[in-house]
Amino acid sequence: MRDGFLLVLSGPSGVGKGTVCEALLNKRDDIKYSVSSTTRKKRPHEIDGENYHFLSIDEFSQKIEEGDFIEYAKVHGNYYGTPKSYVLDKISEGDIVILEIDVQGALQVKENYPEAVYIFLLPPDLQELRNRIEKRATEDEETINLRMNNAKDELSFIDKYDYAVINSEVDSTVKSIESIIEAEKLKVTNIQGVEL
Ligand code: 5GP
Image (cartoon, rainbow, N blue to C red; front, side, top):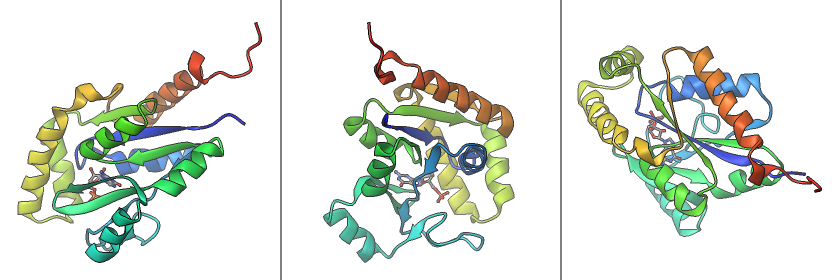
């Protein structure tokens, strides 16, 4: 069986990465979502093990020591990390594994997996981004400002990505990402068994 590949999706807080991932996962069963670990507090609607594995700082540190993460980073004051075994297992089973991670994490992944597909999700504009974060109403004013400043920093790393997709409307964003996936599958380096 042909190996799958890694699809790294980044973009500022509030851009809609979660909604886009959910729509992609509902539409296709060849895509698997990698559930990260985090030391952030659980939001009321979140489910442990589904949205994140919510860990204490000690538990997170132990995982770092045991080499359990492909990458980890401190984002908006909390730690987040991507589980190595899940990701590598699914890729070897032929799946596309989607990582919804920040820019620092994506750059770490790129060091070890330069062949992964790197997609940056953009908001239609920055004011729209603030509106979306405020609408979510799970963050206080200080956190909203921190996330807005981080968004501006993150945008400056866009040239490290292969693709930029503007998320104005979920359905068309999903279609764009599916086109990227189809193109990726057709890359000469990803085609096996062609006899000349
Ligand atoms: P949130 O707290 O809003 O769920 O996520 C905050 C940020 O952390 C988002 O930009 C999200 O993409 C990023 N993030 C989530 N999981 C990971 C991870 O495993 N590694 C890294 N580096 N960033 C992550």
